[in-house]
Image 1 (cartoon, rainbow, N blue to C red):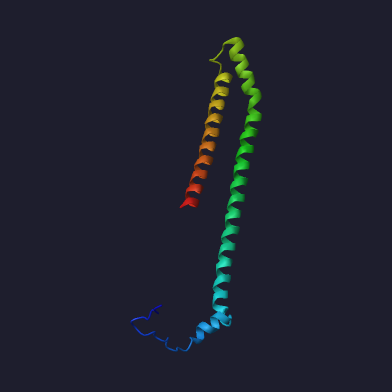
Image 2: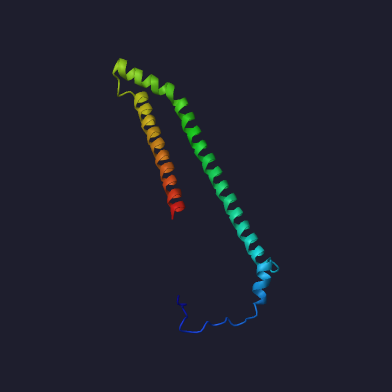
Amino acid sequence: MSTYTPDHPVSQPEEHTPDPILIQTLAGLNASDGLRSAQTARRRVAGKIICVRQQKEKTRRNRATAIMASLGILVLLSPAIWQSVENCIVDGHFGDMGSQVTLLILLLFTALMAALIAGWRNGQEVRHAKRDS
């Protein structure tokens, strides 16, 4: 049996003195710098979360107010709309001033609702685009 001997002699590691700062860091003696930066980061993240929550609450409140106002207008106008549609169907008087005003209000209300829905959906797309990027 033959034994393998390397062609070069095995080098002995040079003796180094360990870095005292590294030893203190590993022992946890100078953790105050890391702790300060971690606390600062936590405060910033917590502040951002609170800000985002407040913005969401404000958006929900505004949306609810707009929907309630639209429904209130619809409830107030529904008897007039019902009457004018019934008059137009029964009598066939499309040229009356009352029927024309009611039809104009109905068209404006529908356009207002469409604009609110489009603005609400556009706002959602903008928020999602900001979140994704």
